[in-house]
Image (cartoon, rainbow, N blue to C red; front, top):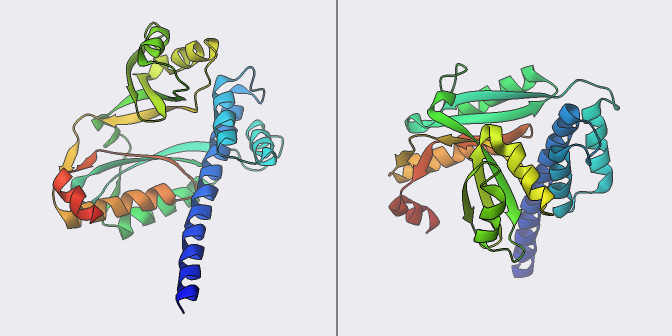
Amino acid sequence: MAGHNKWSKVKHIKARVDARRGKIFSRFSQEISIAARDGGGDPSLNPRLRTAIEGAKSHSMPKENIVRAIKKGTGELGGEAIQEVTYEGYGPGGIALIVEVTTDNTNRSASKVREIFTKNGGSTATPGSVTYQFDRKGEIRIPMDGRTEEEMMEIVLEAGAENIQSDPEEYIISSGAADLSSVANALQQAGMNPSSQQLISVPQNPSMIDEVKAAKQALRLYEVLDDYEDTMNVFTNFEISDEVLSQLED
């Protein structure tokens, strides 16, 4: 039975990885389609599309998926037009959430997002009642590839970047929403290809959660919203205290 249990666990883990890979492919497909819809299907003339394609390739997304997403965006495949829709809501303890969705069926998406909020201790809100609590910013992620932070700053600051941070593998560059394209163009002109470029919503006043049960409820709502097939981004104002986070990791 030990071997059987081990194989069951392996299959379970593999299923989760495959599901996540499917979600990643879905998001790249949506981003590619939206980029092609707004700026045309030629990546050499469409920086947003070029970035989306490069990101998809870095995650081993099949070429035929990329081509199909471009054609869907340009209308070559027919069907319903893709729309970007933003939903707002509150979760357990009054946390605020913004859910960005791309869909060809707004009625379906609205119903599903409302259902997710309701089943997880939250509620949807009227447009504008949550977004005013966030600032709209541009965010670009780019592999380090041996470049120093000083080198990156020289390139992006004059183009409108506001801040640059780093993690072990990439730089994260933030800008005003209106400066996102100019910063991305500056990087590309310097021979660098961002792995992602997007507009994000940054909370003005984070809401700290310092109770384990509330943290679990907030995380559950966030994860279910994020896993919904039409979701592109979920932004929230909640943060979890170090003490509670250590208990969740135990």
